[in-house]
Length: 149
Image (cartoon, helix red, strand yellow):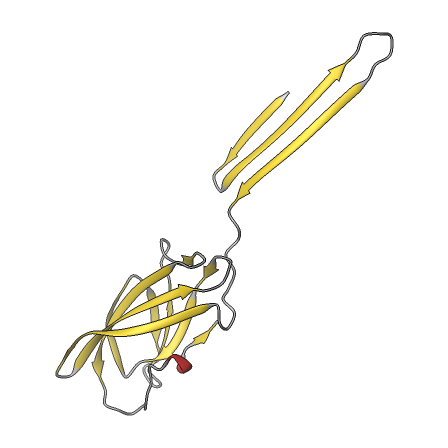
């Protein structure tokens, strides 16, 4: 008997062999093989799993746009979410979900359905534009200020 079952998350193949002998004595021999190619579950990041960099893409009098790259340095997929302080009030963002605390300017960012999982050694990109509110927070976008949740 051969049973093949494909799953949407990967491939699962099971093989079973049965042999019956007819000498008055019934002997059953079974061989079972199992091969799994199932995608590993995405985990939340631990400190050091993600390398986050920001680059100024455009600036104008009173505002700016930054591009952000997240590199997964771990050996497993990560469902990413980061937060950091922005020196401005967000006016738009792309390739991400975000919430900004208007008092502290802390920005919480996560991926969309198509980019929330970052595979090992893969880079996810998103960006945002903001209206400047002045230099009320010194060095707000330094990598040291980014936390992982």
